[in-house]
Image 1 (cartoon, rainbow, N blue to C red):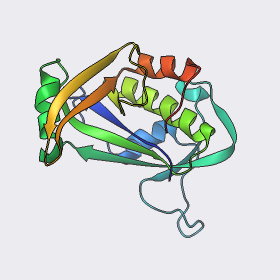
Image 2 (cartoon, rainbow, N blue to C red; image 1 turned 90 degrees about the horizontal axis):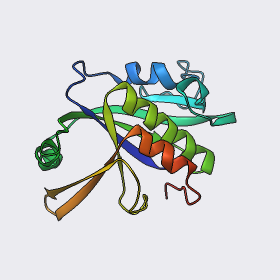
Image 3 (cartoon, rainbow, N blue to C red; image 1 turned 45 degrees about the horizontal axis):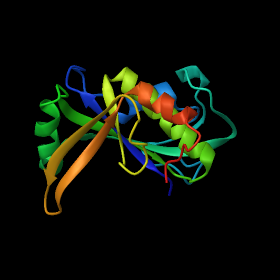
Length: 172
């Protein structure tokens, strides 16, 4: 299993997309019934982000899963805290790379940047990934039960593009 990013979208985007809506924009190939072991409803392959405005291309089709979730009570405090920053989130897209090579990391961040633009959203990065001086990051402190205080690092699509150009880029 590879890295995972969540794309929280602003409630200003009125229609909640399905995983099919999101993957139709980004996927290069979908499983065909019975012809492939990867047949989950939310599975697709991605090999090229140039059509999305990215610059990553792979000779191989890379496996990804895409899910759309409602923000539930578990992260409800994040929802409330984000609203203080004029970020009104109700749903998020979970984008999961199923492999863990650098190409998968690059594709993941470029697709996340594209989806953030499509759905007026923010990409949540682990605080250890982004340098402290990363531009366009809103840090939202909130209570997460039962573990206590946490901080979400919500990045814009421009932050994602900046991070892809950074010499220390990684998603580990």
